[in-house]
Length: 335
Figure 1 (spheres, rainbow, N blue to C red):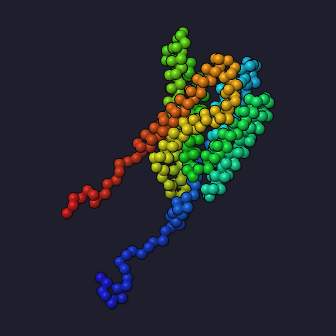
Figure 2: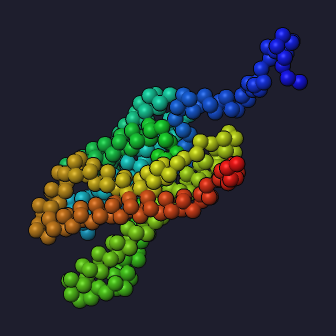
Figure 3: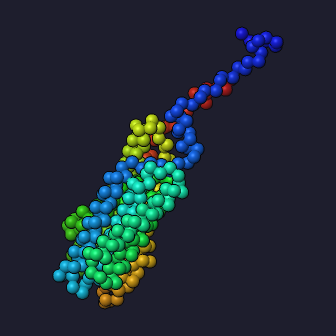
């Protein structure tokens, strides 16, 4: 019945009544509106893995420096092992800070707590290095640089996109563990790539081995980042019933994150560990050439891992996207 003027239904409107949102929908809208930081699942596992990896790197570095075969080359070995220690400290500061701040809702409080946690991790690592390594300038450089890296990692964990930070740390751990395992295949690959009796053939083969290592590390890092983001979204859907979807820039950053951390490690080394690198380069002309070549190789490796990881994550993410839905109204011809 239409509403006639003056009838009892004239004051009623034809618009539907507003429906009160359910409790789950209200909490979701409130979360989006307030901009609460995300929850990073698996933070405990990531923290334990990174702590174990940092302990393994510190132990192997200590054994190399204190070995009887080291002798006067302890400085060179310290400079060679420094990047691995700094990367491990950077990741450990981030993962432990994620674990400590995962339940915090306020962004400012979360960031401050993350930085404080990174500082605590850095102090523990520095004390452990000073207590177990020889008391000299080299040890102090390693301890101070590792502490600074842990603080920077903790600050990184204070970002709102906690899932992206978790993906970056997992991708970096995956790449670093792969590099250590790949070391067993370097000699066979060098022979495969034509390493012979001449120095030039050895250098060319080593270059191809390094590129192969970077390519595979970037591929694994990109896959690890994508798998973590996918798993975290599905877990959030099972736990809360909803999960805020991540757009392609988040996958791009997560895939490139391992390479970005490797380049950040190089920056930290060249600032905090500059004295140790200079001491190693001053030992001889050959050491100077070796340190320069190692620095260039680390930068190239970081760039390769960055681009290959980002490309891998984007390709895998793109393959999961279906065709764009088309409205039926758009397909109907105009009358």
